[in-house]
Length: 509
Image (cartoon, rainbow, N blue to C red; front, top):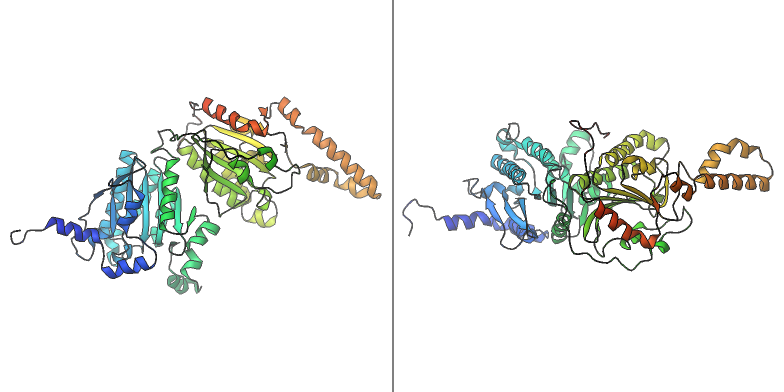
């Protein structure tokens, strides 16, 4: 029996681990949500989680101050984990919440282990703002440490509920964000605040729901049906990356690709749409594709996969969506993915079937040049092994954006179907000879003139000639492409990655 005044620590530990009142657990369950500790259990290897700072707040109404932090393993590899407990003041932040999060991010950097954020938070407690908001160890320090950790250790976020106000920057600074459809949201101001400040009437789902961020804003990466799917996406994403920037990407057992005739997937006509996903499935290890931001800017595919068991990051044109033309969003999407792969030692494979960047007043006003420059800058700066394969065409600055010969690619390969030029023959003839064509009255003579000039243009950019001029390194049959890439990436595994001595680039944003 305990002496008077003694604490029954096992009972107190159990009470704290329970979280908030039963009614909040019941409400969460009704919304299809797990408790924070159950999320951790499903994310991590069995019995691997070790909690820190359990006793953070002596206030019995604020067990663990609303956040669970600690260390664990995922697939045998150490991680740090931070999980908001939405049953405690809606997962809101107090001063100790903030300190626990900061300490965990700092520890992850010391240990050089990935961080997984399991987010479900109403944001800061306004009543505690002086203690948690402005100081050197206030909420801003969380984002400072996330930025400092960026590119050194992988940071993943599974978003199960709200991520409100300043707290929305936690997922924004992560490398990937998995969002549960119908429950997850990110927003800087609530609908009530928006109406008060701007007069706009909106709903949380319309303004910052999971579909908005996975399909329109590009902040979200995976749109998930439920929490198990979000956790599975995070676990799978981690499997392609090393624990930190100094380690090689993890290798798995090799698997053969799907039984797909690669050559048959590519139509002969350069403007005929086809889905590049099928081409990729026939190239990489079976079932190894993990597409990132599949619902946003679908004209470009960004996907992890494996070749002979080794991770590779794929940036691929998709002619099935808007002809594979590059827009501002597709440039942003590609730039971030390229940066992630380069930071964590994942080789890059570019599969090009690109007509170029979109043109027109609307797109110029929206900054297509600036966005395109960002993508091209990241291509140039990437020092991991990178190979460009021109599947069908690479026109204009699209060749640059897809790691063409001038951008330090370790190889530029072309399928026999490939064309490389400033623009396609039809556009080129019209650009050069528009005046002459307009002067030819006879329709048959006009058509013959255009056909002759197209033939001249095609001869000028003939694939064999480009190979002879060393623009491309080899013309590879589709059936031989997988074996060729595997051999090249193996040879490049010890590549010298020095690029430029400086503090940092001035990257277009």
